[in-house]
Amino acid sequence: MGATAFQSDSSAIPLIDVDAEDAVRAFHLLGGRKVINQTVRNSLDAHDVIVKGISSKALLHLVDTVSVLSSGDALNKAIGMSLRTLQRKKADKGKDRLSPEQSSRAWRFAELLAQATPIDLLSSAAGAEAVENALTRMEYGVYA
Image (tube, rainbow, N blue to C red; front, top):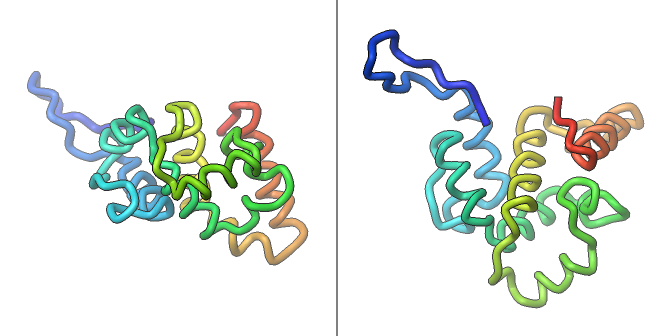
C-alpha cells in the first residue's frame, strides 16, 4: 500500500507512514469509524479493514457522497459491482461485507477521490474526462 520510512538501526521501527494521510482520508470518505467500526490511522490499519472486507454500508456511504457512482457504468468500473447489486445491498441495509477484491477497489477509489478531489473536477468537461479516465484505469487495474 505505501512506503514506510524505517530507522537505520536493527530494530526497524517505523517512523512515518507516508500514505497515512491518504488512508485516513479514504477512511472518512467511506464513512469513518461510525460506518467501518474500526479506527484507521495508517495504511496497515487500512489493510486490516480491506482484508476483513469493508461493510457494504461503507460503500453505500461512498455512493451517497459521490453521486456519479450511482449512474451509468461508473460503479462497475470503479468497484466491479453492478447498480443492481448495489440496490440489493441497499435493500439489505448494508449488513453484509464486500469481498476483499471489492473492498480493495472501493478503498483505492476513495483514496483517489481524496487525492484529486474529483467532485470539483466534475464541474468541467475536461475534469469529468479525467475522472472517467481514472475509473477506466481502475477497471483494468492500472492505478499509476
